[in-house]
Amino acid sequence: MGAKKLLVVAVAAILFTAAMVAGADDQVHHVVGEDRGWDPSSDVASWSSGRVFRVGDKIWFTYSAAQESVVELRNEEELASCDVTNPIKMYTDGLDKISLEGEGIRYFASGNTESCKNGLKIPVKIQPKEQNVAQNIGSMAVAAGPTLPSASTNLNGLSHLLVVGLSICFLGL
Image 1 (cartoon, rainbow, N blue to C red):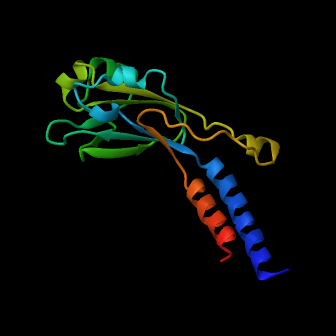
Image 2: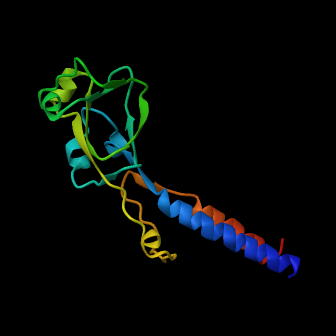
């Protein structure tokens, strides 16, 4: 087998492996409140309604650390009453990334009781990971191109790897 043909086979094998791994690790990054972020002027309840959160996704809170914070509460009652006196965790950096691990409901509210009472709070229902067709039938499925919902980005490096691999093949490197 010639060197060029061997390279093409190697690149194809790498791309296939990367496609299987990327399909298994898809995650969505949700930016709470979109452009306004975690702010009393944001309608975070509308932002979160209809949004699907899955195990492995990330949720991002962006806010002015001088004016706001985010607390994770234990239950729906604490969220409804804005009882932020004994949170599970407090976030104060102004840019906080939280991994959504495990199914269930997590409760986030403003650390500022007044902002919480004015609606700066959300429950996040975390659903199981979506099954990948390729994993279910043992073969690689061709999927439509990614769509990017507002303020959510499906991140994976497969497209970059594909471009590099094809460039290597076409340039004969």
